[in-house]
Amino acid sequence: MTKDLLLKLENEEHFGQIVSEEVNYHPLESWMHADEDRVVIEDVEGEDEQITFDEGSKESVAAISWTCATNRGNRLSYNGSPFRARCLSFQINYISWQAGAGWPVYNSYCPQPNYSASMRFRNAKRHQIVPVFAGSYWVGCHSNARACGNRTTDVLFWVNDDKYDDNTGVFRLTVTAWS
Image (cartoon, rainbow, N blue to C red; front, side, top):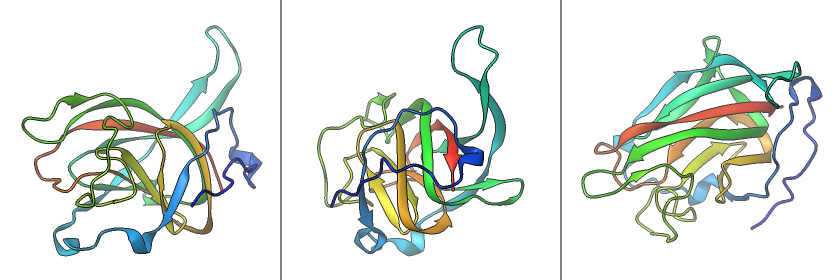
């Protein structure tokens, strides 16, 4: 399913300059739950950040950044509370992680071209970074994206894998707009 996600965000108070890409969504019901009792999800606290768009520019936008681990799900929080959104504009600024021994060290959002039914998010590419919010998980190989769903929920970010306890590394996420 493809949804028109190039919508103007409703809350322009938090709107910044972003690169918009179309991403696909899948309802959370298609999220694999086979090992749900072994899933680790931890809160990750966001940090305020000012983003300047051009070198030497005096114009900037307020944003929030998180450093997310790849060996678990990352539930975003800000000022001690869950970070919740229906619409989200984000960019992944830094990626360095390995999906266990024998896998290369990844530095891209969508490092593998294939899919696997054994992965947590079967409709996402193997080892892709996967945002989860608004009742859906979002797929597509865009490290700068904007997406809107049907309802406001907590925001989580994962890597798509079938085994998390052997993963090492992090990725850095910046949200420039949300509602």
